[in-house]
Every structure is written in C-alpha cells, then in structure tokens.
Length: 429
Ligand SMILES: Cc1ncc(COP(=O)(O)O)c(C=O)c1O
Image (cartoon, rainbow, N blue to C red; front, side, top):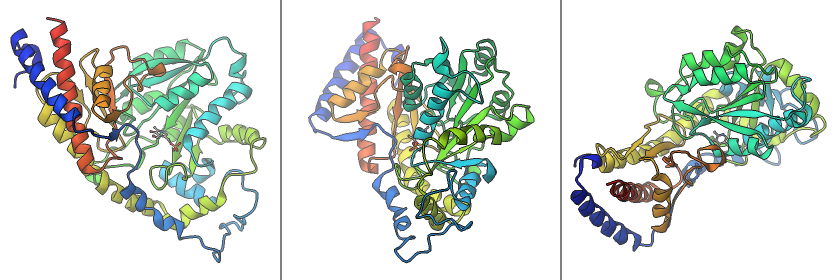
C-alpha cells in the first residue's frame, strides 16, 4: 500500500469507506479492553507472592542494627533496605532516604516542602510571584499534576531520542530564576521508552541555574525494568556523581520505588541525594512522621536478598512483558508501516510505547477506540494540562491486558489510526 498522502481523493474515499465498514464490524463485537494505565498484569503480580511468606508470626523482626521493626523509630529507614535501594538506585546507602509506599507521594512531598518551607533556607515558593517547572514532553501526567496542583506553571520542553532539548533547558534554567525544577524520567522514559544519552546527563549535571533552589527531579522509575538481556539494555550515566564532578552536588533528587518490581501501592520508595539536601529534608520530615513502614522494608530485603535478587526477579517480569511489546510493534508495523500516518517508539524497557498520529488526529483515534470498547490513555495526557498542541501523541500501555486481548486491542487501534487519518486527509482535499 502506498503512503496515504500519495492517494488520490477517489482512492482515499474508497479506502475510508472500506475502513469504516471494517470499524463497524469490530465495534459490533462489543469489546471491553484496556490499554490505558501502566499496571503490571496478574502474572507479574504472582511473581512476588512469596514476599508475603518471608515474614511470619515467629520471624525475628529485627534489622541488622538491632532496630525492632515492629516498633516506632528509624526515620530514614533500616540499613539493609537502604543498601538494597541504594544499590538499585546507584547511590551510596548513606545518601538514601526511605519513604512510604509510593515515589509519587515522595515527589509530591518534596515539591510541597519547597512550596511551604523552601529549599535549604531559600524563600518558600508560596511567597514568590512566579514559579515555573520544566516538563519534558511527552511525559508523565502525574508529574505535571503535582506541580499544577501547587499553581506552578508547567513549561513544556520537547523530548528527543537522546533526552530533552538541552539547548532550551540550559537557556531557560540559566536565564530565568523562576524556573525551580525539571521533571525527568531518564531511563525508558514514560511514555517514549527512550533513555538519556551520556551527553544529556552531563549537560544536566553541569547546569548553571539562575535559581539557587533549582533541582532536577530525576524519577528513575524504570531503572532496572529491561525487556532484554544485558546485550540489549539501555544504561545511563549516574547523575549524582556527575553533579558532584560538575561542582553541583546538591542539584539532583533521585527518586525510585519497587512499585513495578513487586506490588504497586505496597512497595517502598526512596530518595537519593546529597547529604546536604537529605539533612534539610529530614529536618522537615521529623514534623511529619516518626518513620515509615519498616516491616515492609524488612520484607523486601528478606525476599530479594540483594540487588542480584532484584535483577533475577526483573528477568521474570521481562519474560512476561517482552512478548507484549513485540506484539504491539509487529501489529503496528504490519498495519501501519510505510503508510506515513503514524510513528511509534520501540523501547527496550519500561512500560510504554509512544505513538504519534498525523497532526490533529490523536483525540479522534482515542475516542474511536473507546466507542469500539478499547480504552486508551486520554489523548493529550502526556502534556501539561492535558493540552497536546499538535493533538498527535498517544501513550500505549501494553503490560496489563493478556497477550491475546492486547493483540485485538492493538489491531483495533491501528484500524482507528487508519480510519481517522483517511478522514483527516479527506478534509484537506
Ligand atoms: C515515571 C513514573 N514515576 C512514578 C510512577 C509511580 O510510582 P509509585 O508507585 O512509586 O508512586 C509511575 C507509574 O506509572 C511512573 O510511570
């Protein structure tokens, strides 16, 4: 099949009619499928059931420093769990702070503290006329929602195959003191699946911010979420040490969690940053909590053992997820390859595929899918405020449905892309 842009009006009309009739047939099947949120499927969750058996009524619930994990205390977490999370996050354990069950909550609290109390003695953001955050787009809607919630202006910065547009980031960060942060998902990014190049990491670490309290919010949520073996994995430079080398030791907050390693919502989250930043944060945390869930921290350590245990566990996740990502790519390639009406990423890890339609088609594609029983992430969700100026980006989340449901859903999605694109091109003829 020729690219759609080379079809005559008559050819396009005939094609549109054929696609419409195919769409009506599929719509009649009454599908009820969901490719919207990046949730692990049941088989993935089953991999961690043993975690529920590692602690029993007669288990010794003491951490290695003698802390009784059943009792109050341990504001920053037990040492063996800090080591486990530090190894995963490539940070020394004395630069790690363990938090509760969700890294998003930790990110929210980090922004909230800066807003009400300031960063390292700086002016609380609530007292400033203007606070801006850079949002790498397409990006993660829940990041954007946090800053939006505090009335912070989200400023989009385009993401490419090597990371954010660094010329733009450098200019905005160095010239504008109201820019206080940048949201980054540096590895197997949500949604593109791309990872930052070494040059991008070095340039971020060497930023010269106009605002002293500017920080990089480095959400490395997919740090060990590979789909393939070591020969085909993305690696990124470790940013804490790059910041130190660049003379910017306090510039970054690294976030991570075990949400998509064991049980989302019941994992442990962590922050790795400079000791200076940690001290500032701990001072404020003391007014917030006596400590987080140490029994859960212990459970993680007893179940995984060490970082090698987490790596082995992640290979099992990969074996479940890889066929799903490959099926999505094969179907998109077979149905849309060479038609010039869509492009998509082929990530080697993470949870998402990013799809770009012709300009002005994403909303219509998502709504056609919904009418036919396939729920996609809302079009626009990958942009601050849900406003994608080109109305073209759609996030595909292949993890949750079964392989056969996923294939059906992707076929329907591809059909909707073709149908909506044909209609769009006809409008322009
Ligand atoms: C980039 C990113 N960060 C954080 C989260 C949520 O993490 P948590 O469950 O630790 O709050 C997600 C979940 O989809 C994510 O994609």
